[in-house]
Each structure stands twice: as structure tokens, then as C-alpha cells.
Image 1 (cartoon, rainbow, N blue to C red):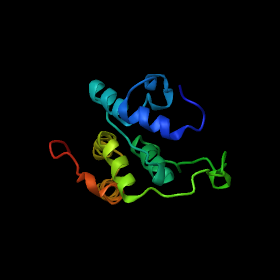
Image 2 (image 1 turned 90 degrees about the horizontal axis):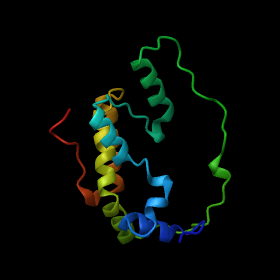
Image 3 (image 1 turned 30 degrees about the vertical axis):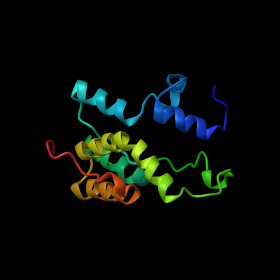
Length: 148
């Protein structure tokens, strides 16, 4: 059973997909699920990347035809900088490699979504690919050459 703050156990369950993992609703709408649903229904995909939230929001709205200025919320609802993080250490290189290997399929889904995003320019897509490669150099990440 899971307890609040039991990050190590949640990670093990998520990676191994065992025990009561299916009860963790936080993971139900992961990138693989979103990618699969979009592929089944053949919907065009737009991506709003967290690290480029405002720019991607504007490009999505303009792609959809908004001619006026695109407004984004100015109110900060939660400033996570003020949160106290109980984790004080960084992962070792071996730990980072293991985490990357566990997220390999998630990275593939993420890059597929980015590659097919109709609101992103090519240089923005390549920027996301390069950033992913920097974070997980062990995965030999690339875009799928059979699409876009």
C-alpha cells in the first residue's frame, strides 16, 4: 500500500507496473495514453511544453485562428519556489541512467507528440529533441523518420 510521500515505492511500482499501480490515478493520462488516443482518432496534435508555456499557448491560439492578442493568465496561483523540498541530493549518474531507461517509452511518446505538433516550428521541435538528449544521453533519442 502507498503512503503520502513514499516516492521510492511509487517509483518502483510505476516502473515495474505491479501491485496497486493501476490505482494511482496521477499516471492514467501519461503521454503514451494521450499519444495513443490521438492516433486512434487521427486528431491533429498541438503541444504546449511546460518550459515554453506562454509561447506555445500563443502559437496554439494563433494556429487556431485567433487574430487578436493572445492573453495568458498573469496571476500566479502557486509559487513552487517557496515550497520546501525534502529531497536534498541529486541523483548519481547511475541513478540518472536508470531513470532514463525507465522513461524510455515515455520519451518516445513525448518526442512523437512534439514531432507531430502542428503549432510548433521545426526549430522548436529540434530544441525539445536536443534538450531531451542532454537529459538522457543514454537513450540515443531521435524523431521517428517514418512521419513528418
